[in-house]
Amino acid sequence: MKFRTWIAIIAGALPGSLGAVILFLAIYAWPAIRLNGLQFAIHNTWNLGNLYADPVTTGGVPIQPGAHYGILFLIVGTLLSTLIALLLAVPVGVGAAIFLAEAVSGKLRLWISFFVELLAAIPSVVFGLWGYVVLIPFLAHYVFPFFAGTLGVVIPIFAGPTGSGYGLLTAGIVLSMMIVPLIAATLRDALVAQPAAMRESAMAIGATKFETVWRVVLPSTNKVLIGASFLALGRALGETMAVLMVSGNALNYLPQNVYAPISTMAAFIVSQLDSALQDPTEMAVRSLAEIALVLCLISIIVNALARLMLLAWAPAGRPERA
Amino acid sequence: MPVTTMPLGTPTSHQMRPSRRLFSTLGWAATGLSLLLLSVLMLWILTVVFIRGFSAISLSLFTTITQGNGGGLLNAIEGTAVLSAGALLIAVPLGVGAGIYVSEYRNSPWATTIRFLADVLVGVPSIVMGYFGYVTMIEWLGWGFSVAAGSIILAMICLPYICRTTELALEQVPGELREAGYALGATDWRVILKICLPAALPGVLTGIMLALAVSVGETAPLLYTAGWSNYLWDGRLTHSPIGYLTYAIWTFINEPFASANALAYAAAFLVTAFVLLINIVSRLVFDRLHP
Image (cartoon, rainbow over the protein chains, first blue to last red):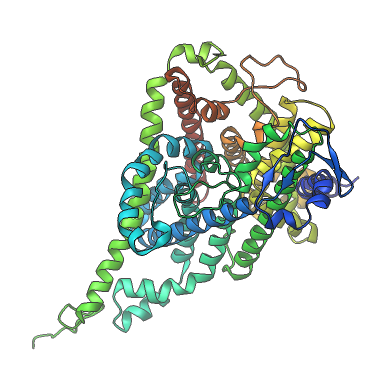
């Protein structure tokens, strides 16, 4: 066989593994998908039922009496924590990118960029450790009571009780730290790549340096910013360990303020598999597989959209770093 | 005759409205503060991990296995090494092969598809990969928590990184080199394996190192594929759980014992130092390759 054919087959490992993940999760989750139907996404009760009773047959499949699998609270928790992460990460990422691209140059830019981007290399579980040991006590003792006393007076979702520090806002803050390097790095590269003529013409009509950057150079990179934010969104949606360690792992609970405990789809899979295994009908484990499948499909869609945007909009040349 | 010079560039302060000056000053302050904030957070994490971790490091950590809420991390260090080595053993041939295909036959539809899917695969949450591993290898194949299951899942996570960095490295090899090879009558595989790949080797190795860093830092996909064990690896690929450092961080920080917390800090120190070291070395190599 020709060399080209051989390595074409080897290269098939990539689409192969992606396909296998979707296929096998779907096959395994199928009984749960049939049982749960649309209720899965709109009901707010995850209940394994009475594990000591005999299974009853519902909708053609055996389940424990009283078992119910609804993950609305996980969808809400995932969306809200990701939203907070983006709200915090986009402005900070844009600011850092502007300063790196326009205010420092040469070796200094390289080294500061590298240092800040190392944030992205720190493993998720180390973020979780730091959040658990340092950030949570700090937020719970100083920051959250301050927020509740000031912002909380005007904006109801910031009002107390401020809780233990484990919760939505903490998860959002930790997630934002994990995704901000991606936004900053991608946007910085795009800013640096903008033609000098663009800056020169703005300066020539009397704009200050910052006005040039803010009103002329930055708007020309807004598509890159949207693409990078989508990539960051995809990463935040699936982040597991750090969220697991700081979110409070709420069950069947919709947050009433920003300090309330939550859980996300990714963290829930880890925190619940042990108890799901107690279910002799396997429906709980299969419902967890359904969560994994939904999460997988969402992140594929988000990432595919982000890559398509960056491919279609980015100027030709250097490919985006993974 | 005296030469009068026109003011150039930015208007001087007396010409500019104060609001514009204020806007620019505040703008620079805000962007500078953003960068400062990121640097401070990075330093904060590093100090916590390094100071607490360093004080928890001792020789017995590297010579004894975990016992209850104390002991050492030898089993976890060995497990992380075994799992990552296994992952690279699978992912390197496949990833480099895929990278070669995507780079050398770049315009074929299959290459475009694979390049795109590699980027999408990077974005699939690692816990999803882990659950896939649990469903297929632990449940259906009945392997139990094992080295094989953990390594295969880590390999799937590393695959797209290795593929894309190999592609980037091969792109840097000048086309003339290939033409020279073909002109001497070399076949496809000789040109690629004997000429292009050696020329691109530093870049390819950088990618493999980064993939190693990713696999050493992963936790979620291993929880339900590799499991955890307090003992050293018994050499079996299936039906035998294995320890790893990231599990120690996650579990032992939640224990109410100082000895257990010390293990977590030590493990965090080892993992973070290793991952950062790899990133710094790769960056130095990368900068040398792409000046």
